[in-house]
Image: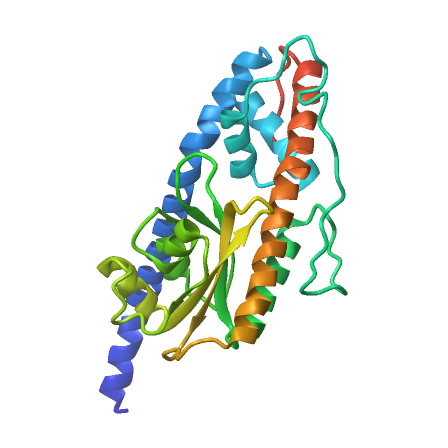
Length: 289
């Protein structure tokens, strides 16, 4: 490269850095926009329910329960906004709740993550899926409690723009949405030509370096889809073998049962803790940690 060429490249570097910064800022703003209305709704509910003096105190209440049980703030806010309110005559929010042990992960019997560590379990689900399919790109999405659709909760090997675009997906226009709707594994042999995608979704996947993908529903014992794990590949995909499909069925069943257990055990434990704190701090100003 000539001296002039080096100078031109140097001149473009600040512009590229600034563009990357702006894109990161936009992604952060979109993520906040998805979570903020729900958290604000939960703050209003808690402020009224426990006679808290302001919204910050309600946020602090959410934050303490979230940190104590390692439950995402948005997840906890969604439960507060959708679960029936506690009986004011009861000390416990769920006084007749039955507790069960965390279900085993049959696809990896030697892997025993902390029962409350949702991230570790979803990471194991994702790792096993990628190992079966033979790729290093993929993500786990969970069903949104508030509106129909899927939220990305775990990912690896994917670009920040991909995670931003597919942070929330609705009921149509993607392979993962189809897998969730039908409750079956879905293979996309070639993203470029498959009609399942909307054009913006197709462009976002191709831009991330994925040419094919395979989505597996995470289902409960009753057959309810509570999430999706997807593997993305750089090249086209001819298809998976019967052995691979059966192995992924096990991953989907294990992951779905575990998510259902976590929602009715750890998440509800966090709500019980929040309720006890709220009752004890009624009318008191609380600070965020």
